[in-house]
Image (cartoon, rainbow, N blue to C red; front, side, top):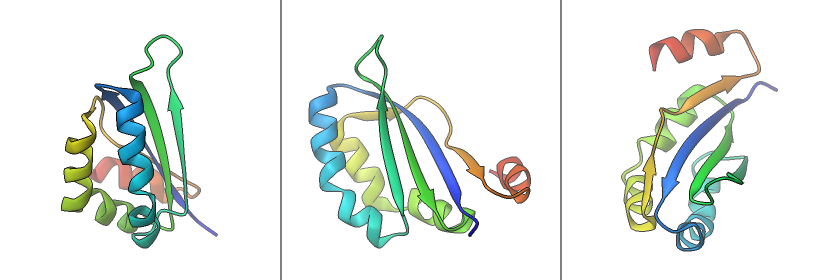
Length: 101
């Protein structure tokens, strides 16, 4: 099965407050194509976070990240993406998808 993994680097105002909102959004993630997710926290700055989300396709990932509900939750959580979303795919089409993003 082919999948697309998207990595997003966030700078959050308060990790614990952010994580509470993130965890509350988990059911919505599942409803909108997120099959797996992981939160990684910097050891140097606990408010620097990398989140990975796994989708069936690049199209599913794009649709998820375009959701107004996601943008609202991120704002409510005090999150600021510090870098572009970086898709990684298990097939060679990933390079073309990345170039179009």
